[in-house]
Figure 1 (cartoon, rainbow, N blue to C red):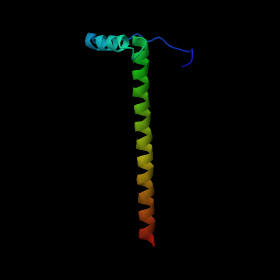
Figure 2 (cartoon, rainbow, N blue to C red; figure 1 turned 60 degrees about the horizontal axis):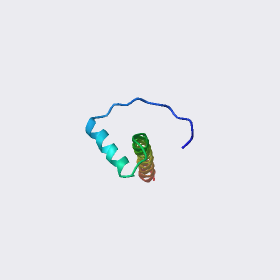
Figure 3 (tube, helix red, strand yellow; figure 1 turned 90 degrees about the vertical axis):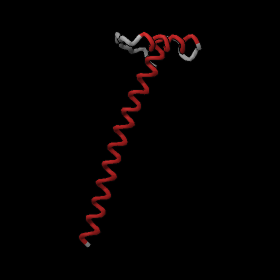
Figure 4 (cartoon, rainbow, N blue to C red; figure 1 turned 90 degrees about the horizontal axis):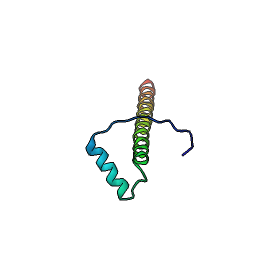
Length: 74
């Protein structure tokens, strides 16, 4: 990751903070910040994939409708 970072204050439930701390203690992540960055990447990747799926699905539906319409015209 690059050196350009923006600090974002965030509040999370105590139980979630404890779970993050456990992941850090287990060595899964080096810090809470690292774990939260990982989670943010997952959320944004999922949103991106959902948008891509919606666009390709809409394009496929449009293509099918267009092909059906051409068949009807013949």
